[in-house]
Image (cartoon, rainbow, N blue to C red; front, side, top):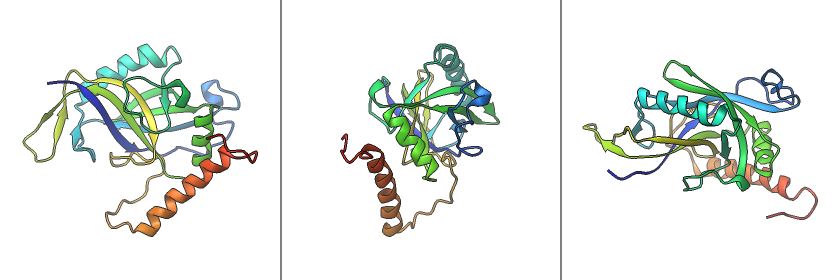
Length: 209
């Protein structure tokens, strides 16, 4: 089986209020830190994939050792189809991960980069966002129709923030999901997001796009 880039989403709910003192307990005076669920083991996500717990445990330990402990557990705002993290689009750094049942939870520092500033303003405006894992590996189809299982060759690359999560319960602000969401509501949501991004990029009257 050949490896492919595996991208999976989950709604990310921030714990507590987002303010400049939220990073104090992580040794980041004046920094912004959010906490929430990053990944879920053993449950079928909206992409039809299941991540066995022992594989996620192995990759989380590796990620802690190779990235978090070296303060370089970086992620991007929105998903590139790439096996590397693009520093031009970095928005956050993961400070800590831990298990809570079958959920992998994390504390995430929002950086003062252009993408990080956009991410911060979206959170402050109450925009619902998702967290998305990016990895490399193969999958195997199970007997359950439309379900595939991630295999032993899986390698975790990073977690990115996105607007369209695919794993249930991985938003930072959980909302009930209905398949009958009308177009007016959807358009309004993305228009609001676009307005926030535009205001950040064009705050001096000159757009830097």
